[in-house]
Length: 359
Length: 111
Ligand code: SF4
Image 1 (spheres, rainbow over the protein chains, first blue to last red):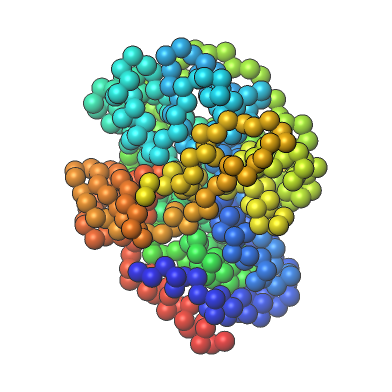
Image 2 (tube, helix red, strand yellow; image 1 turned 90 degrees about the vertical axis):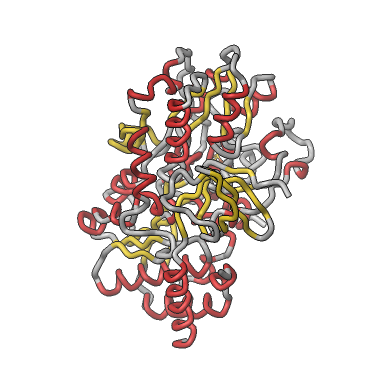
């Protein structure tokens, strides 16, 4: 299939015209929940294709950004244990914790490895029998099943030195919290790949309870524009529902096999979000049956969490402020020397702003 | 070519330096840590080219990478799949893709 067909400029222009025409000057605020959308919107200059009355705000969908300091501090504490290897995806390395980061611990000689998948981490554990390999499980329902697979395999094949520090989160609960929050939202662009797992039905409560429309969007420029047009049409007609623009990948019930594996390994729990606080039922924790692979079994002293002074990440994640309103932005805070997590992750709103709006 | 590095958010990057590098003192050149811009890897469906039990290989644009198929029921060689963090998470439905494209075309004509 030709991926370029989803980027065709002429079609982008006509969808953009249709949006301007159908929105009829009425102010609308749409939140793109997912960090990959934030990045795609910035990269393709989507905002420039929208009329002035339509505003896009970024949501809490960058997994690294919403991970609270306490998680990073615990990972740092674990990294300092003897005979311990920390395995992580690359974007966690530079995230500043309260007083250190994994990057810094790595420079100090701790064994921290960047892996491409949980299977690689599991392989690492098999190859290092004298060591404890701890994988840092961060991410939403898209990543959590891949971690679930590794936990099940570790149990099945008896890899006793493999554990996971679980910081996984669920996407619908913060959307519920935001729907009745301080920012008025007229529609959600729902994350494409989280929805590939959980299915579009998972958002049904949003139009039903909050009368806010949802469109599950793909990641190409035409996908995003089309999804915005669909939201405009929902607002204009006064109806709201869950629609799927990304139907080539997202089914109403999601990926049932993945959901089965997910719930075999994890149960839901309350979870702490940067900026949003503790949200009921918004996290995953490892089930008791897999306790032997839960990194929480290691006793470590974790420092009390401390936030970077002046960092507005918490407000950025709620769509309350733009990164440019932060006094650190582009000055003391850049992707190379990040002060807050929103500047670290390639999907963070501050990083997207820095990369595409500053130059 | 080396398989893209995976990020928790699903972004991929082929640059080693961004993640392996240690923090430089302020004022030193920061150009050395440039990050390859390849986030679109995520959204590009990859073709299943090999299956060995639960795992196999997927390919796009000449780049092959390993993938786990544990999360998908009945994967076949030739299927297009979305790969996230080293695992195929969903199959691409070509009929739906064509329908979406047809919709774009209609809008273009209407304009
Ligand atoms: S610019 Fe930096 S300090 Fe300011 S909110 Fe963003 S990440 Fe935090």
